[in-house]
Image 1 (cartoon, rainbow, N blue to C red):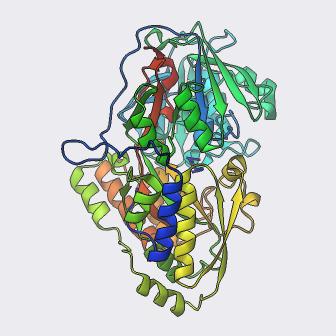
Image 2: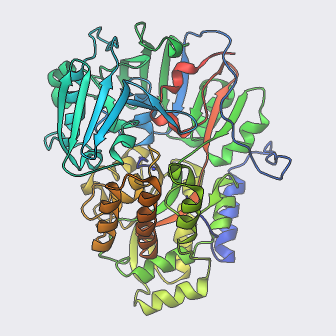
Image 3: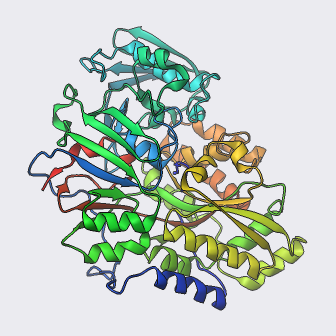
Length: 555
């Protein structure tokens, strides 16, 4: 999720005592059908291989039915902070720059930029681009769209990306200048995502607070345009005939996103053809779908997501860092990967994947990851830490939702691990939609001590992750505060050299890991199912901000 539900934007280890492990294994087995086959392995013994793309389509098609696990919170880019929101919105609204499937960037609604001094960013805006209402995009629309992120009245979830922005001005018919109060070399990288989305200034003003809801929709420049939103059921987009990028004109006349919260129902719908495709395939369905080659194809691709525990209340049971360390050490993460993800994940001690550090040299990145403390599975040491902290018998509320089997298994495993070391967890199950609000609404988190997130990064900049753990940040859900950490992150923003910036970021990452602000469990891969009617999409996390559906056509 970006947060989210995983929602928005790395991991490693093992799981629980023998009895609890047996329970988890039983849950996994009960979720498999008799036809489940062992997963395939490559020539080097790998469980899966990554694909850069799917085959090119041969024909245009009339429609696509795409499955999602939850309904978007909003289609307003200022509040699009989770997988469902951005999966839809990326096909309707575009950013100043594009995030490609290999996580490189290229021109989008801006054809280029200049950075003449540390405080100035000048953007050249693409000419001849039309909004879905037929009006032409100008620099004024860019200024209006970007300014919303610094407006207290809007309350953008992405305001932290604009933390150092002093002014946003139109300096030409197709030129916009952003002036910084202090240097910020992460700002430009953020403009491939929601912080760089451009919408019609006229529509933003006319719709006001209703912009992006189910009745108003949005007015942007993407290859699809908003058609309808049936709350709780579906969102339909139609192909936009006047789309500016003739190489990316949608090959389908329409796409309908259908919300199926039940993971088994989604999996069945993939196999029957009721749904043509989907991302985030439930892990316990992967082998089933891989075996059913007549129904379609399953792809694995580049991801920037890490499954982590988020401690949302640092005043209660998890106030003492020893208790947080103990819970991490009580989880056998390698066994958790096998049970929850069927092995389709990798262990990590980091809150970011390596691929978002790609501007720094490999040597610096190696050093950053090697410096992170590791908390190996050790029940005895974990019990000792809980006793030393005086936390035996301490209660905590663990929020969850039945998004997929992996989440159900992970929550049960973590709760069992907590009991093994003397803690007293209460699992609080919510609807999928309600769970997503935990990442955007502080009131929704009242009384919640722990949750799980699959946190993806939406730019090639690890500071995006570590900035959210600063004092007072919107996504600092536990209210953690460390002045030394804040100073490191804030200093990193102002460093232009990628290696020097990465070194400061790595020191901050080490501090956050030592205090276990969030607990990394494992890093995932992007999974994508394409049924037997369609092909063309890329299996990459860039689907959050790239118009991926435009590439889909008939086989």
